[in-house]
Image (cartoon, rainbow, N blue to C red; front, side, top):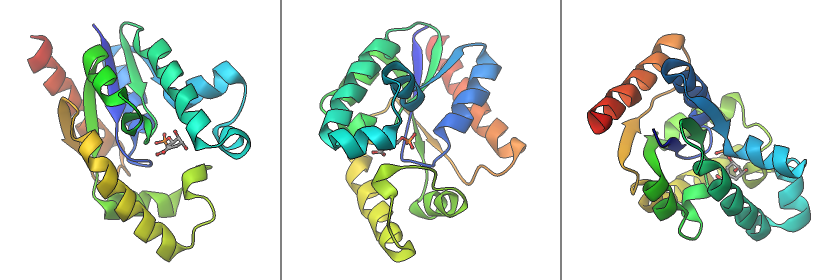
Length: 178
Ligand code: S3P
């Protein structure tokens, strides 16, 4: 089987679902951010701060090409991966793509719980963050919408909810690989 790629905005739960889907399917799990950090031995915020976003996107694209060629993996992409160059076309040609679609309110609720160390969101007040997420999500939607599958996700705050999303993906995989 080819790579299964999870895409969607920051904090929709791509890594959480990716790990659970990996267990469910027996496929190896890769997170593109972690892969970049491991390959370059540098943290994402450090790359943004020292090299800027454009250089990060070029590194990200190169690493996407490296990892998406692997067979039998679940790959969690960065929130901005599908929006750069022809990454979305590349993903659709190389992988089974799943857009994890969440409402801005869901994303903002996740962010309020844990924003993590995401350079794009750093230093914003709650109001700025609210406006930024809504605007950027709307801008990115056209890229995300090119995915072969769309899975609507709510707040993933229980094992049952995570399991439901994993089962939805597994069911869609069965219909496409049957
Ligand atoms: C980014 C999302 C991050 C990471 C980087 C940029 C974005 O990944 O690649 O901070 O532009 O949306 P996650 O979606 O895994 O947080």
